[in-house]
Length: 70
Image (tube, rainbow, N blue to C red; front, side, top):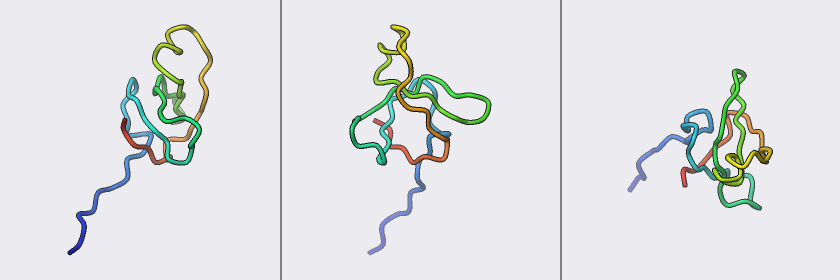
């Protein structure tokens, strides 16, 4: 029996404001996708609260990164 093919979700497809996990980064379980610039780079915070408190983003990632919606 063949498994149904499901395409990979990429960071560029995830809506700003969502919680995502990047399988390539294992030290953090999930990130808050707080913004995206004109070049397609996404800015990820530890949580929505961290962004709201004015803390700097933790990860800047290209839109082609594979993500899992949390």
